[in-house]
Amino acid sequence: MNLDHIEDDLLQRYFDGELSNRPLQQVKEHLDKCHVCQKRQQSLVQLHSLLAQNALNLAEQIDFNRLYGRISSEISRQKSATFSERLRAWWDSLQLWQPQVWAPVSALAVAGVLIAVVSISRHDKIASDRASGSPNTASSSEIIRVDFGGKPGTVFEVALAEGTRTAVVWINDDVEDLGIQ
Image 1 (cartoon, rainbow, N blue to C red):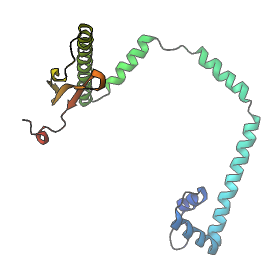
Image 2: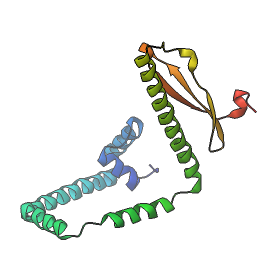
Image 3: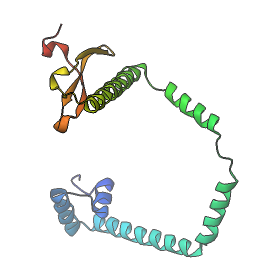
Image 4: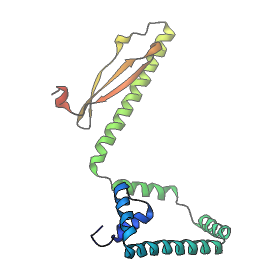
């Protein structure tokens, strides 16, 4: 707000109810005293009323069922993209990605494959141990060191309740903080 009158943007924000307490109070106080700004505020109210009334009048003239029917028929007439066109569009969108995106994506893919392989092999071993009656020992964990796109990591298993186990993948974000060289 300048010294003489309320700025247009501030007056519009007041009209829209977007002002916080202090600016709201300042605008109200100014409007109580300034007839020029009161007229501008009244013009905003009248403009809003005219626009709302015109929108209602136009809406009453539109046959929305017919409009919906035209839109639906046009959509059904359009040829949908073939699988190869969709695949090509997907491939083209991948070309826009920066190369830095591929390293973490590759690391996640490798981690996922390692988890799946370790989990499946452990599940098969546990199932065969149960079938043969041998005890399931927690000390038979295998620890594998892996390079995840330039970041060292570890894949290992953790024994859970009732003899089940799960694979854990740990990717070290900051090698120096861990004391690993």
